[in-house]
Structure formats: C-alpha cells, structure tokens
Image (tube, rainbow, N blue to C red; front, top):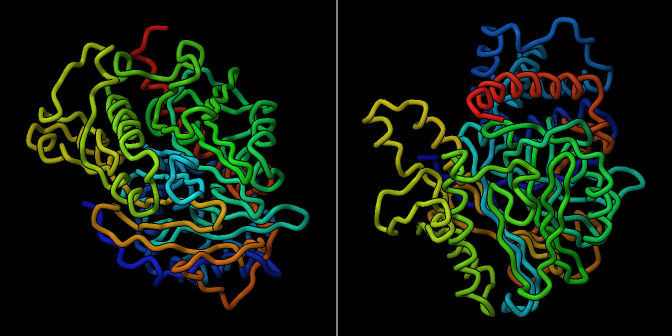
Length: 460
C-alpha cells in the first residue's frame, strides 16, 4: 500500500524562470529534498552494480547541464556522479498505467470542460517526483505551461496559458520507429499551440517516435485526451506509421486507458487480452469509466469526479469478445479498477509469483489524481489514492500569466523565493543537452533489452 501524502496545499507550486542552470538544480533540490535522497542513493548503487547502464564512451555533460546537476547535488548533499547514475536507472525503470476521461458541457454540470488523469505507476516513482509534481515552465517566445513530473529530468505539459489542456496514458504497441518522442510532441504543442487542431498538426506531421513495448517501454507511447477554450474534445492515438484523432463531438465525453480503442490495433500493434494478459485490467477500467460517465452525464463537477476517480468496481463488459465472461464479484484480474490498488498482491505472494506481484504493484498504484478545468485555469489535485486522500483546487492563472478570475475556493500555489533559468532542457526532447541525450540513450538501451525478451515469445 502506498503511503498517504497529506494535504496538497502544504506543498507549493513553482514557476521555473530565472538566471542560470545552477539555480534550477538548487530549486529542484529545495522542492524534493530529503524525500528523494534515499531513493537516489539506492538507485545509484543499482547503477554502480551494473556498469553496462552507464556508457563510458559518452561525452561529459555540457557546462549548463553540469551546472544544473551541481545545484541539485549541493541541495541534496550528493555527488554529481551519484546523481547521474541514479537518474539513469530512474529514467530506465519508469512505467505507468493510467485511466483518464474528458467531458464537456452539458455532460459537466457547471459549464466548464474537465479532463481527468489518474496517474498510476510504481510507488518509488513518487520518491522522485515528490508529493507535489506540478510546476510551470516558461521559455522566451513560447506559451507558458503547467507541467507534471520532475523538473530536473522531464515534464509532461497538462495546461498552457491559452487554455489548451492534455492528459496522457501509456500504451504498448508493435509499430515502432524513430522520430519525436511523446514528451517532445507534447511539449511542442504546449509551447506553440492554442487549439486542439494545432496540436493535431504537431502529432500528425511528426515524425512520431514510437517504442515497441508491452511493459516498461509503454511510457514512450501515449494515448492523449485534449481540450481547448473553444470546447473541442479529442483523443489522439498513434504509432510510428499511423495516427488517428477521435472527436467527441456528439457524446461530449470520452475515456482512455492503456490500449488503442479508435486506432486499428492491427495497424498499431496495440495489445488486447488475447495477446497480452497484462492488458486485461485496462479493458476493465475503460469500460467502468465509460459506464460512470454515462451514469453521471449532466452532473459531473469536481465533487462527482472525485467519486468517479475513487471507484473500486471492475467492469468486464469489454472482455466478453475475448472469451472472458466473469461476474463483478469473481476474482479480479490485476490492474482492474480506476482507483488502482494492488488487490491481488497477497495472493501472488502466497503462490510464490514474485514477478506477478512486482508487476501488479508497479502498474496498480494510483500515485496522483488531477482534474483539470481550462476555463478557470484550475487543477483539482490529489496526492495518493483519491479514495483516501484530500483533493485541493489550485489556481494556476497567475503563474501562467493568463487572464481570468480565480474561481471561488481555489488556492494559489505559493511562489518560489528563488528564480531559475527558463530555457532548461528536459529528457526525451531536442533541448536536453548532452546530459539529456545521455539519459535518453540509457533509457532506450535498457528498454530495448527488456522489451526484446518480451517479444521473443510472440509469433510475428
């Protein structure tokens, strides 16, 4: 069971904007401090015991990236080499399995659109991201946007100052190839786009990088739900050679999990329970979310959304086409509930299935929950399982430099005392510098080694 996080308002937001990279690293250390120090040291030991993770032939970090690591190392009282090794392993082992939805008026009951994201991943990831993984990034000449993840490594844009919003979940595919990473396409959309139509052009034009993956490599392939100020609501699903946009024009609502539901799976190679048992829970979560959206249509507001993302009820209706006709009260498959818990952990351990126990824990723990309201520039945020932790509305309009009035009851994230450089690089992007490129290559090499073992047992 993941530890509880406590009230979200105790953990201030940050706007990354300042004078040098060293202050960026120091600011990241101030945000995360002792919460990640132990984990970083553990990951560093893992890396040092496996020298193949670190490529000695790679060039040293550039001056700016090195300054960033030095700032982080001073704040954490750790060596630069130690942090570099820890970061290599952390980026290699991240995996996520999420359940998301989008809804527009009149499905929402208060006139504002809503995107929702239950971020499910291995509990150690929170040691790196911290209890409050939100920060605003601004680069000269681009649109400021709100990010989720860890500032010193990579970020996923969820809302920009123009009202373009996005939530993501990972998906396994077989149609792979080189191109822009999911992170980079997302960041480019947030920095340059005001509408879903403009974001579609970024993804459709690509070139889209995709990783052949069924487990940890899923992090590099995304399903995304988008909305904007005009009321457009769409799902993007893609692989290297294929892209599909589903417009929620008629239903005014949509859900997404960890498989392709609109893009032909025979083209993308996205998995179903017939080819990959681990994906069974994704079908249960998607069916349950659609059922809750239909049942609550016209009444969905933050309070009702809180109940929906806290749900522990499976739905096997989408599994019948794969010959799985079970009742709701029978033994659940792993990762089958919207609010993700490792329900089968004890049973796996009792049977000595350590690999199954580890995989379920890694994919069946909700670390954060976000409900994003673009009109009010507000994110309703929960740290930990939404079924047992406090949800707090946070207003980001001021930090984004956006027009509008703060909604009643929404809190202002605290502004940082220090200012840090705006043009910081991030992993999986073209602006990551030498160190960002190095971490990306390490992640890809480890992912390739593990995923090759997965696909060795599949015909074709």
